[in-house]
Length: 417
Image 1: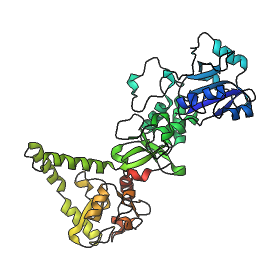
Image 2: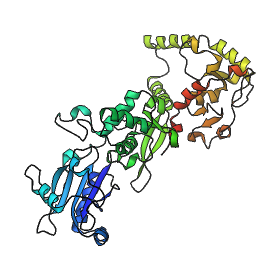
Image 3: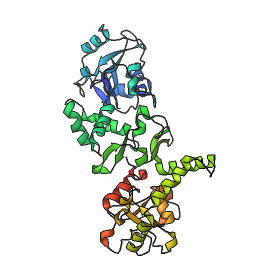
Image 4: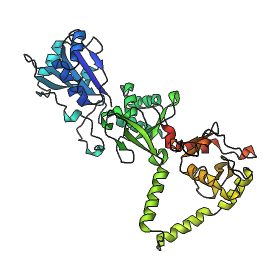
Protein backbone atom coordinates (compact mmCIF):
# COMPACT_ATOMS: atom_id res chain seq x y z
CA UNK A 1 0.00 0.00 0.00
CA UNK A 2 1.39 3.42 -1.00
CA UNK A 3 0.39 6.76 0.49
CA UNK A 4 -0.35 9.59 -1.97
CA UNK A 5 0.16 13.25 -1.08
CA UNK A 6 -0.75 16.20 -3.30
CA UNK A 7 -0.72 19.90 -2.44
CA UNK A 8 -2.33 22.76 -4.36
CA UNK A 9 -0.06 25.81 -4.08
CA UNK A 10 -0.41 29.31 -5.43
CA UNK A 11 2.43 28.70 -7.94
CA UNK A 12 2.11 24.94 -8.42
CA UNK A 13 -1.44 23.67 -8.61
CA UNK A 14 -0.51 19.98 -8.14
CA UNK A 15 2.70 19.18 -6.23
CA UNK A 16 2.97 15.50 -5.36
CA UNK A 17 5.34 13.19 -3.52
CA UNK A 18 5.20 9.71 -2.02
CA UNK A 19 7.65 9.93 0.87
CA UNK A 20 5.06 9.23 3.58
CA UNK A 21 4.75 5.69 4.88
CA UNK A 22 1.43 6.04 6.70
CA UNK A 23 -1.75 8.10 6.58
CA UNK A 24 -0.97 9.50 10.02
CA UNK A 25 2.43 10.81 8.87
CA UNK A 26 0.88 12.34 5.75
CA UNK A 27 -1.78 14.17 7.74
CA UNK A 28 -0.38 15.13 11.16
CA UNK A 29 3.32 14.27 10.80
CA UNK A 30 6.18 16.73 10.53
CA UNK A 31 5.77 17.09 6.76
CA UNK A 32 2.05 16.36 6.79
CA UNK A 33 -0.94 18.32 5.56
CA UNK A 34 -1.58 20.10 8.86
CA UNK A 35 1.90 21.62 9.15
CA UNK A 36 1.94 22.58 5.49
CA UNK A 37 -1.33 24.49 5.77
CA UNK A 38 -0.24 26.14 9.03
CA UNK A 39 3.21 26.89 7.54
CA UNK A 40 5.05 25.11 10.36
CA UNK A 41 8.11 22.83 10.60
CA UNK A 42 9.70 22.69 7.14
CA UNK A 43 6.67 24.15 5.36
CA UNK A 44 8.12 27.70 5.03
CA UNK A 45 10.61 26.36 2.50
CA UNK A 46 7.80 24.96 0.37
CA UNK A 47 5.85 28.18 0.76
CA UNK A 48 8.86 30.16 -0.47
CA UNK A 49 9.23 27.88 -3.50
CA UNK A 50 5.59 27.43 -4.51
CA UNK A 51 3.55 29.96 -2.60
CA UNK A 52 0.91 29.29 0.11
CA UNK A 53 -0.92 25.95 0.08
CA UNK A 54 -4.64 26.25 -0.70
CA UNK A 55 -5.48 22.58 -0.13
CA UNK A 56 -3.81 19.22 0.52
CA UNK A 57 -5.06 15.76 -0.55
CA UNK A 58 -3.98 12.52 1.10
CA UNK A 59 -5.03 8.97 0.24
CA UNK A 60 -3.92 5.35 0.18
CA UNK A 61 -3.68 3.89 -3.29
CA UNK A 62 -6.16 1.11 -2.47
CA UNK A 63 -8.91 3.43 -1.22
CA UNK A 64 -11.81 4.97 -3.12
CA UNK A 65 -11.78 8.27 -1.16
CA UNK A 66 -9.06 10.78 -0.35
CA UNK A 67 -8.90 13.16 2.59
CA UNK A 68 -8.90 16.83 1.54
CA UNK A 69 -7.63 19.53 3.90
CA UNK A 70 -7.74 23.32 3.84
CA UNK A 71 -7.84 26.26 6.23
CA UNK A 72 -11.38 27.32 7.00
CA UNK A 73 -12.24 30.54 5.17
CA UNK A 74 -11.24 33.53 7.29
CA UNK A 75 -9.16 31.41 9.71
CA UNK A 76 -5.40 31.13 10.14
CA UNK A 77 -5.33 28.04 12.33
CA UNK A 78 -8.60 26.12 11.96
CA UNK A 79 -8.36 23.27 9.46
CA UNK A 80 -11.30 21.45 7.91
CA UNK A 81 -11.29 18.06 6.25
CA UNK A 82 -13.64 16.39 3.77
CA UNK A 83 -13.57 13.21 1.75
CA UNK A 84 -13.20 13.46 -2.02
CA UNK A 85 -13.46 10.51 -4.47
CA UNK A 86 -10.00 9.54 -5.73
CA UNK A 87 -11.46 9.24 -9.22
CA UNK A 88 -11.83 13.03 -9.26
CA UNK A 89 -8.12 13.48 -8.49
CA UNK A 90 -6.59 10.97 -10.89
CA UNK A 91 -6.60 13.24 -13.99
CA UNK A 92 -4.44 15.89 -12.32
CA UNK A 93 -0.69 16.15 -12.85
CA UNK A 94 2.17 18.49 -11.98
CA UNK A 95 1.16 22.15 -12.35
CA UNK A 96 -2.23 21.06 -13.67
CA UNK A 97 -4.39 20.54 -10.59
CA UNK A 98 -7.91 21.52 -9.58
CA UNK A 99 -9.04 25.13 -9.75
CA UNK A 100 -9.86 27.06 -6.61
CA UNK A 101 -13.51 26.94 -7.67
CA UNK A 102 -13.42 23.15 -7.78
CA UNK A 103 -11.82 23.01 -4.35
CA UNK A 104 -14.49 25.29 -2.88
CA UNK A 105 -17.20 23.07 -4.39
CA UNK A 106 -15.70 19.95 -2.84
CA UNK A 107 -15.59 21.53 0.61
CA UNK A 108 -19.12 22.92 0.43
CA UNK A 109 -20.90 20.04 -1.35
CA UNK A 110 -23.59 18.67 1.02
CA UNK A 111 -22.86 15.04 0.16
CA UNK A 112 -19.31 15.26 1.46
CA UNK A 113 -18.62 14.44 5.09
CA UNK A 114 -17.18 17.64 6.63
CA UNK A 115 -15.19 17.59 9.82
CA UNK A 116 -13.54 20.43 11.68
CA UNK A 117 -10.18 18.81 12.41
CA UNK A 118 -7.66 16.95 10.19
CA UNK A 119 -8.17 13.54 11.70
CA UNK A 120 -7.78 10.32 9.74
CA UNK A 121 -11.13 8.80 8.89
CA UNK A 122 -11.20 5.26 10.30
CA UNK A 123 -12.45 3.91 6.98
CA UNK A 124 -9.33 5.25 5.26
CA UNK A 125 -6.77 3.88 7.66
CA UNK A 126 -4.84 0.71 6.99
CA UNK A 127 -5.66 -2.14 9.38
CA UNK A 128 -3.35 -2.48 12.33
CA UNK A 129 -0.72 -5.19 12.14
CA UNK A 130 -2.21 -8.59 12.77
CA UNK A 131 -5.75 -7.31 13.27
CA UNK A 132 -7.24 -7.75 9.82
CA UNK A 133 -9.30 -10.67 8.63
CA UNK A 134 -11.25 -10.44 5.42
CA UNK A 135 -14.51 -11.75 6.88
CA UNK A 136 -14.60 -8.83 9.32
CA UNK A 137 -14.90 -6.19 6.59
CA UNK A 138 -18.33 -4.56 6.19
CA UNK A 139 -20.18 -5.76 3.11
CA UNK A 140 -20.68 -2.18 1.97
CA UNK A 141 -16.96 -1.33 1.95
CA UNK A 142 -15.80 -0.30 -1.52
CA UNK A 143 -12.28 0.30 -2.73
CA UNK A 144 -10.86 1.71 -5.92
CA UNK A 145 -11.24 -1.58 -7.80
CA UNK A 146 -14.36 -2.87 -6.09
CA UNK A 147 -14.70 -4.84 -2.88
CA UNK A 148 -11.01 -5.79 -2.55
CA UNK A 149 -7.88 -3.86 -1.71
CA UNK A 150 -5.13 -3.77 -4.33
CA UNK A 151 -2.90 -6.00 -2.21
CA UNK A 152 -5.65 -8.62 -2.11
CA UNK A 153 -5.87 -8.52 -5.91
CA UNK A 154 -2.10 -8.91 -6.18
CA UNK A 155 -2.04 -11.82 -3.72
CA UNK A 156 -4.87 -13.63 -5.49
CA UNK A 157 -3.11 -13.22 -8.84
CA UNK A 158 0.04 -14.87 -7.45
CA UNK A 159 -2.06 -17.65 -5.94
CA UNK A 160 -3.84 -18.30 -9.25
CA UNK A 161 -0.53 -18.64 -11.09
CA UNK A 162 0.57 -21.53 -8.85
CA UNK A 163 4.21 -20.83 -9.72
CA UNK A 164 6.77 -18.04 -9.22
CA UNK A 165 5.67 -15.09 -11.34
CA UNK A 166 7.24 -11.75 -12.27
CA UNK A 167 5.67 -8.36 -11.58
CA UNK A 168 5.17 -7.86 -15.31
CA UNK A 169 3.21 -11.09 -15.61
CA UNK A 170 1.10 -10.17 -12.60
CA UNK A 171 0.22 -6.82 -14.12
CA UNK A 172 -0.98 -8.46 -17.32
CA UNK A 173 -2.97 -11.09 -15.43
CA UNK A 174 -4.78 -8.53 -13.27
CA UNK A 175 -5.46 -6.30 -16.28
CA UNK A 176 -7.43 -9.10 -17.94
CA UNK A 177 -10.24 -8.53 -15.44
CA UNK A 178 -9.40 -4.92 -14.53
CA UNK A 179 -8.19 -3.10 -17.65
CA UNK A 180 -7.93 0.18 -15.72
CA UNK A 181 -5.70 -1.34 -13.02
CA UNK A 182 -2.69 0.87 -12.32
CA UNK A 183 0.44 -1.22 -12.56
CA UNK A 184 2.26 1.30 -10.40
CA UNK A 185 0.33 -0.30 -7.52
CA UNK A 186 2.20 -3.58 -7.96
CA UNK A 187 5.62 -2.66 -6.60
CA UNK A 188 4.46 -1.28 -3.24
CA UNK A 189 1.98 -4.13 -2.69
CA UNK A 190 4.56 -6.79 -3.55
CA UNK A 191 7.00 -5.08 -1.19
CA UNK A 192 4.40 -4.99 1.59
CA UNK A 193 3.46 -8.68 1.25
CA UNK A 194 6.90 -10.28 0.64
CA UNK A 195 8.46 -11.50 3.88
CA UNK A 196 12.01 -10.93 2.62
CA UNK A 197 11.60 -7.66 0.74
CA UNK A 198 14.05 -5.05 2.06
CA UNK A 199 11.55 -2.18 1.96
CA UNK A 200 8.51 -3.91 3.50
CA UNK A 201 9.10 -2.20 6.84
CA UNK A 202 8.28 1.13 5.18
CA UNK A 203 4.59 0.24 4.98
CA UNK A 204 2.10 1.22 7.66
CA UNK A 205 0.94 -2.37 8.26
CA UNK A 206 4.53 -3.50 8.87
CA UNK A 207 5.57 -0.95 11.49
CA UNK A 208 5.83 -3.38 14.43
CA UNK A 209 8.50 -6.11 14.83
CA UNK A 210 7.22 -9.65 14.35
CA UNK A 211 8.09 -13.13 13.08
CA UNK A 212 6.41 -14.67 10.07
CA UNK A 213 5.17 -17.68 12.02
CA UNK A 214 2.82 -15.44 14.03
CA UNK A 215 -0.06 -15.70 11.54
CA UNK A 216 0.05 -12.09 10.37
CA UNK A 217 -2.22 -11.67 7.31
CA UNK A 218 0.35 -9.58 5.42
CA UNK A 219 3.03 -12.31 5.39
CA UNK A 220 1.80 -13.72 2.10
CA UNK A 221 4.63 -13.85 -0.45
CA UNK A 222 8.33 -14.58 -0.88
CA UNK A 223 10.64 -12.72 -3.27
CA UNK A 224 12.83 -15.06 -5.33
CA UNK A 225 15.75 -14.39 -7.65
CA UNK A 226 17.73 -11.23 -8.27
CA UNK A 227 17.68 -8.25 -10.62
CA UNK A 228 15.86 -9.08 -13.87
CA UNK A 229 15.05 -12.59 -12.67
CA UNK A 230 13.06 -11.46 -9.62
CA UNK A 231 9.74 -13.22 -9.21
CA UNK A 232 7.22 -13.79 -6.45
CA UNK A 233 5.64 -16.93 -5.01
CA UNK A 234 3.34 -17.87 -2.14
CA UNK A 235 5.23 -17.87 1.15
CA UNK A 236 5.36 -21.20 2.96
CA UNK A 237 7.25 -21.29 6.29
CA UNK A 238 7.93 -24.99 5.80
CA UNK A 239 9.64 -24.23 2.50
CA UNK A 240 11.12 -20.76 2.93
CA UNK A 241 11.90 -20.73 6.64
CA UNK A 242 11.03 -18.22 9.33
CA UNK A 243 11.67 -14.49 8.82
CA UNK A 244 11.28 -11.52 11.09
CA UNK A 245 10.79 -7.80 10.79
CA UNK A 246 13.67 -6.68 12.97
CA UNK A 247 14.32 -3.24 14.44
CA UNK A 248 17.73 -2.19 13.08
CA UNK A 249 17.72 1.16 14.87
CA UNK A 250 16.18 4.61 14.41
CA UNK A 251 12.74 2.94 14.29
CA UNK A 252 13.64 1.26 11.00
CA UNK A 253 12.46 -2.31 10.38
CA UNK A 254 14.16 -4.67 7.95
CA UNK A 255 13.54 -8.35 7.12
CA UNK A 256 15.95 -10.85 8.59
CA UNK A 257 16.12 -14.61 8.13
CA UNK A 258 15.64 -16.31 11.49
CA UNK A 259 15.78 -20.04 10.93
CA UNK A 260 14.75 -22.84 8.67
CA UNK A 261 11.48 -24.47 9.67
CA UNK A 262 13.27 -27.79 10.14
CA UNK A 263 15.50 -26.33 12.85
CA UNK A 264 12.52 -24.78 14.62
CA UNK A 265 10.58 -28.04 14.51
CA UNK A 266 13.63 -29.98 15.70
CA UNK A 267 13.96 -27.70 18.72
CA UNK A 268 10.25 -28.09 19.45
CA UNK A 269 10.59 -31.86 19.24
CA UNK A 270 13.57 -31.81 21.61
CA UNK A 271 11.59 -29.74 24.08
CA UNK A 272 8.66 -32.14 23.82
CA UNK A 273 10.92 -35.14 24.47
CA UNK A 274 12.45 -33.37 27.45
CA UNK A 275 8.97 -32.65 28.79
CA UNK A 276 7.57 -36.19 28.53
CA UNK A 277 10.77 -38.13 29.11
CA UNK A 278 12.49 -40.64 26.84
CA UNK A 279 10.23 -43.58 27.71
CA UNK A 280 6.68 -43.49 26.35
CA UNK A 281 4.94 -46.88 26.70
CA UNK A 282 1.92 -45.88 24.64
CA UNK A 283 0.42 -47.23 21.44
CA UNK A 284 1.39 -43.97 19.71
CA UNK A 285 5.02 -44.53 20.64
CA UNK A 286 4.87 -48.08 19.28
CA UNK A 287 3.42 -46.75 16.01
CA UNK A 288 6.26 -44.25 15.69
CA UNK A 289 8.82 -47.02 16.17
CA UNK A 290 7.17 -49.15 13.49
CA UNK A 291 7.10 -46.20 11.08
CA UNK A 292 10.80 -45.59 11.70
CA UNK A 293 11.54 -49.24 10.88
CA UNK A 294 9.60 -48.98 7.64
CA UNK A 295 11.42 -45.76 6.72
CA UNK A 296 14.77 -47.49 7.25
CA UNK A 297 13.80 -50.29 4.88
CA UNK A 298 16.01 -50.04 1.84
CA UNK A 299 18.42 -47.57 3.51
CA UNK A 300 21.35 -50.06 3.71
CA UNK A 301 21.01 -50.84 -0.02
CA UNK A 302 20.74 -47.12 -0.84
CA UNK A 303 23.90 -46.43 1.19
CA UNK A 304 25.79 -49.21 -0.58
CA UNK A 305 24.85 -47.69 -3.95
CA UNK A 306 26.14 -44.29 -2.88
CA UNK A 307 29.33 -45.72 -1.38
CA UNK A 308 30.06 -47.37 -4.72
CA UNK A 309 29.11 -44.27 -6.75
CA UNK A 310 31.30 -41.89 -4.71
CA UNK A 311 34.20 -44.30 -4.18
CA UNK A 312 33.62 -44.44 -0.44
CA UNK A 313 34.31 -40.72 0.09
CA UNK A 314 32.07 -37.91 1.32
CA UNK A 315 30.80 -35.80 -1.60
CA UNK A 316 31.72 -32.60 0.26
CA UNK A 317 34.55 -33.23 2.73
CA UNK A 318 36.23 -36.21 1.05
CA UNK A 319 36.11 -38.12 4.38
CA UNK A 320 36.77 -41.85 3.77
CA UNK A 321 35.91 -43.17 7.24
CA UNK A 322 33.06 -45.43 6.18
CA UNK A 323 31.53 -45.58 9.64
CA UNK A 324 30.89 -41.83 9.46
CA UNK A 325 29.35 -41.81 5.97
CA UNK A 326 25.57 -41.71 5.48
CA UNK A 327 23.14 -41.82 2.58
CA UNK A 328 21.44 -38.41 2.31
CA UNK A 329 18.28 -37.94 0.30
CA UNK A 330 18.12 -34.71 -1.70
CA UNK A 331 14.33 -34.83 -1.94
CA UNK A 332 13.11 -36.37 1.35
CA UNK A 333 12.38 -40.08 1.58
CA UNK A 334 8.95 -40.91 0.17
CA UNK A 335 9.19 -44.63 -0.30
CA UNK A 336 11.53 -46.97 -2.11
CA UNK A 337 11.21 -44.97 -5.35
CA UNK A 338 13.25 -42.15 -3.78
CA UNK A 339 16.19 -44.49 -3.00
CA UNK A 340 17.95 -43.79 -6.30
CA UNK A 341 21.53 -42.57 -6.69
CA UNK A 342 20.57 -39.35 -8.56
CA UNK A 343 18.48 -38.38 -5.52
CA UNK A 344 21.30 -38.98 -3.08
CA UNK A 345 24.58 -37.70 -1.73
CA UNK A 346 27.13 -39.60 0.31
CA UNK A 347 27.82 -37.28 3.23
CA UNK A 348 29.67 -37.33 6.51
CA UNK A 349 27.14 -37.61 9.34
CA UNK A 350 27.42 -33.98 10.52
CA UNK A 351 27.18 -32.61 6.97
CA UNK A 352 24.19 -34.87 6.35
CA UNK A 353 22.42 -33.28 9.32
CA UNK A 354 23.21 -29.73 8.10
CA UNK A 355 21.93 -30.68 4.64
CA UNK A 356 18.67 -32.07 6.05
CA UNK A 357 18.21 -28.94 8.17
CA UNK A 358 18.66 -26.80 5.03
CA UNK A 359 21.65 -24.99 6.51
CA UNK A 360 23.74 -26.25 3.63
CA UNK A 361 22.84 -26.48 -0.05
CA UNK A 362 24.41 -27.19 -3.43
CA UNK A 363 24.06 -24.82 -6.37
CA UNK A 364 22.35 -26.87 -9.12
CA UNK A 365 24.29 -25.03 -11.84
CA UNK A 366 27.82 -24.59 -10.47
CA UNK A 367 27.65 -27.65 -8.18
CA UNK A 368 29.34 -25.65 -5.42
CA UNK A 369 28.49 -25.82 -1.73
CA UNK A 370 26.62 -22.87 -0.15
CA UNK A 371 26.33 -22.34 3.60
CA UNK A 372 23.87 -20.39 5.69
CA UNK A 373 25.26 -17.26 7.35
CA UNK A 374 24.62 -19.06 10.62
CA UNK A 375 27.61 -21.27 9.79
CA UNK A 376 29.77 -18.45 8.47
CA UNK A 377 32.06 -18.30 11.52
CA UNK A 378 32.01 -22.00 12.32
CA UNK A 379 34.43 -24.77 11.47
CA UNK A 380 32.21 -25.47 8.43
CA UNK A 381 33.01 -22.12 6.76
CA UNK A 382 35.84 -23.79 4.82
CA UNK A 383 33.29 -25.75 2.80
CA UNK A 384 31.56 -22.65 1.42
CA UNK A 385 32.22 -22.52 -2.32
CA UNK A 386 33.81 -25.96 -2.37
CA UNK A 387 32.97 -28.02 -5.47
CA UNK A 388 30.77 -31.06 -5.00
CA UNK A 389 32.61 -34.29 -5.77
CA UNK A 390 31.21 -36.04 -8.84
CA UNK A 391 30.44 -39.79 -8.86
CA UNK A 392 32.70 -42.07 -10.84
CA UNK A 393 29.89 -42.44 -13.37
CA UNK A 394 28.72 -38.89 -14.33
CA UNK A 395 25.32 -40.39 -15.15
CA UNK A 396 24.84 -40.96 -11.41
CA UNK A 397 25.38 -37.30 -10.50
CA UNK A 398 22.54 -35.58 -8.61
CA UNK A 399 19.82 -34.21 -10.86
CA UNK A 400 19.84 -30.41 -11.12
CA UNK A 401 16.08 -30.17 -10.57
CA UNK A 402 16.38 -32.13 -7.30
CA UNK A 403 19.19 -29.88 -6.03
CA UNK A 404 17.06 -26.86 -7.01
CA UNK A 405 14.11 -28.34 -5.07
CA UNK A 406 16.27 -28.59 -1.94
CA UNK A 407 17.83 -25.15 -2.47
CA UNK A 408 14.43 -23.46 -2.77
CA UNK A 409 13.70 -24.60 0.77
CA UNK A 410 16.78 -22.85 2.14
CA UNK A 411 15.08 -19.63 3.21
CA UNK A 412 18.38 -17.81 3.82
CA UNK A 413 19.06 -18.02 0.07
CA UNK A 414 16.19 -15.60 -0.65
CA UNK A 415 17.34 -12.51 1.18
CA UNK A 416 17.00 -9.60 -1.26
CA UNK A 417 15.92 -6.02 -1.76
